[in-house]
Image 1: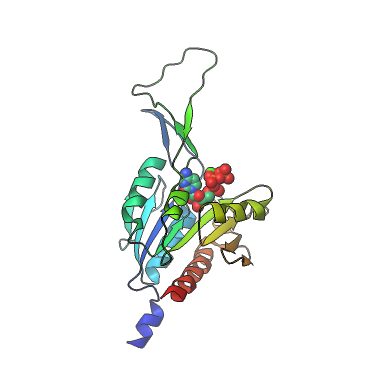
Image 2 (image 1 turned 180 degrees about the horizontal axis):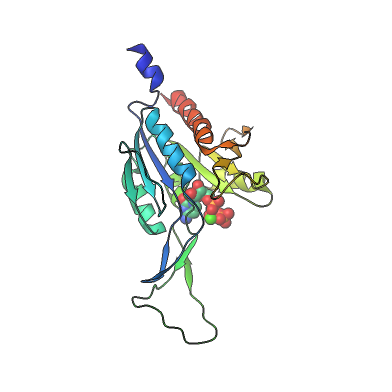
Length: 226
Ligand code: CTP
Ligand code: CA
């Protein structure tokens, strides 16, 4: 039926989405985390499902629930998030990395609870795997790879740099200028940069509406490949 494919333009396509924060263990009871709510990534996963895609959502700890039609993989650490993504990356047509992945993780997490002793205390950290960058390096021309960026200064230049460095097709830049945008809020204001050099600035809108804008771009990119 013709109207069915128009309704579900991503039927037959597989999508991979990351969402939420990561928790990096310091010891069995403590971690390094961040304030990501996961709302943006979950909204993207729901929209991709609605558009007919087969969706895997690799999620850090959040308070959110995903529709039963979504294959949700719950993870904690950046390493676990990377491992889960690496398993499905090759068979994913659309990959959207909205997670707020920790850049550093404790080098030697303690196996027992750390006791309070000295006045000064420090934890040695090491870099995590850059999931977007690592997957970007293995990306094929048939895949649509979309990353996010949140910057406080020289926003466009930093986002442009991430686009190239991580070999993404698009970077969704979260505007910090607007009070209604970003962590914990229900709205977002984004600028989407493409590898072709397009810069598309959108109005402040709900994360569900932002998800629609992002998915439209992914559909257009996939249609150009097919
Ligand atoms: N990202 C990732 N793995 C990491 C760090 C980031 O996949 N270890 C992804 C994020 O999900 C996002 C994009 O890379 O899609 C950009 O994240 P960001 O933190 O802005 O970039 P970084 O390269 O970590 O640079 P910095 O934090 O120094 O700005
Ligand atoms: Ca980072």
